[in-house]
Length: 307
Image (cartoon, rainbow, N blue to C red; front, side, top):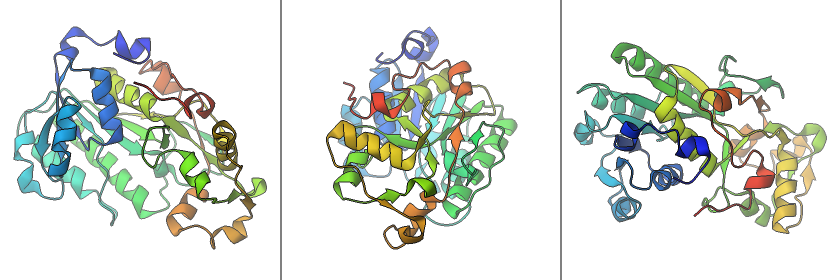
């Protein structure tokens, strides 16, 4: 399996013959499939019939089902011994009804051996640039993050009731050179500015292939009812991240604007990211999952493409 020694050599033999259900098999799910390289039987839930051929070509068994329609999820119960939940909540409200329907479907049979959920670092809200670990209490600042807090709460309660070990990965900004819409060169190409240094915020990152390795290791050895930061080692201000990307890609660095002018340039969602500053401690990721980051900072990862 491609990846770090801990991702490739530590998998128990029985896990390699296991059955995995990926819920929300987008870019990261496809990278997990590539890591597994046919060693597990992998089912991929999709609501789009147009994705069936691509999922099958990637090595998955596609299942048509919609997390917004409970009646389409009947086949999920007892299907797999491990579940990787990568599906985002719906776009509105403070609760994640998609996760609720998924757990209801899984509960119709015996619980899987492990469930891993990819949440978001946004659950913390603004931390004023502080370095935080997983004991920090969530403090969401928008409904998008509240939905993730609700999903985490549902999953923990379900894990306690069913006995299924649930591991939650809190994920920051995901990037990769070959991730559609997930590389700073695209924003740089639009000429969008960044905040002036005195107004700037700390952001956190993870290269998409490292995140896929973290997901796989969490499925194999993630502690039950445990939150783990799936973040790299970097501590970069947002503007420095884009300056680094510009230098590596041979592009002009972005202009700087004061926060007072930023709202005239950016959408409310973009501004929400610029109103939150934190530095994520990733010691649990390396100590408990024993992940050796291939791309410990964006300097190593921004131009990398794995095959």
